Image (cartoon, rainbow, N blue to C red; front, side, top):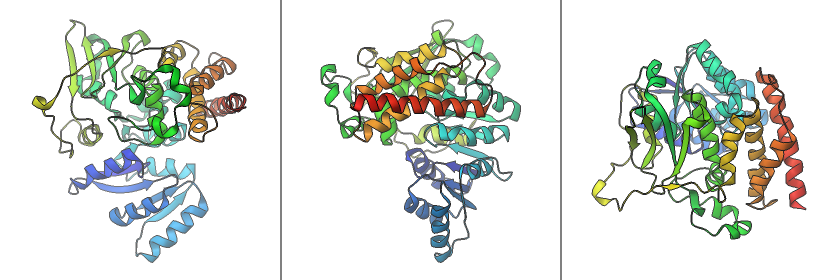
Length: 392
């Protein structure tokens, strides 16, 4: 199987390569892409010798091409957003790991879906922003959509392979959340939270943006939106509970009130390996869950005072289509401003809420990728203005 990894230098991308390294007889790396970690991409290209590598800027690509040529590598380096779509939909590609963070991952995900690829989705924004448009592309292209987020993979693993019976099987689903680093911190001190503190997740090793999202629980809000599309659920069929140990990754509550749960160590290599091997199972490299060593498994309600952004998931799902794209754009701007030291941690939700107030999609406005991109840009402009006012 030939694999294209979109976002190969991030945590999901490197974990994917780790899984592939355990099965070199089954998989070939066809293309690798990165945003700014050029040295890391160089090392990956030398180790895996993909046919293509992709970077955003032409100058970056030319510099990497020269370094690869000097090292005797035949990898061709491309540049730009269109190149991402080209490698994701290339006729020689069998499977695409979509691990680009943010709305920038939507166009190549759409390209892979329309080309009928095995699409392993770690980019939740493709569904948060694209929603109906993205799922339509999956159906029309005949793509195999496989969720990689640990929670959505858990739900997927708890369901039968025959998707036609899902609606008859599910009463509701429960997405678990660790609660992040501030689950027990005094809410009154949130104004003094630093970026490093927000990025210190207790269970998972992730990039800085998604780590902040975990601290605010916006990652769970986006996962609620993603679950609505992945499993064709009504908003009220999606619940969230805190589970600090991150052992139960999510659950399906069936119509007879039986509960199906997927458990394991907090290691992204498990859902990655499942996505690569589905419907089979293969070695992932993750550690075995040691039940006698577990101190206990606990569950708590999610406090919406501590995590006010979580409620925005259901609010935007019930609003006109495109509202979830506005939320995602605003959050990306707000988190970037926080990480840059421009706004406080507790301002992130304020930017998101204000942007949802100021940018309201019209019904039937978001019927094309172009409309979604324009809406995304408009939301980012407004969010940036709100962040600037809060920074003063």
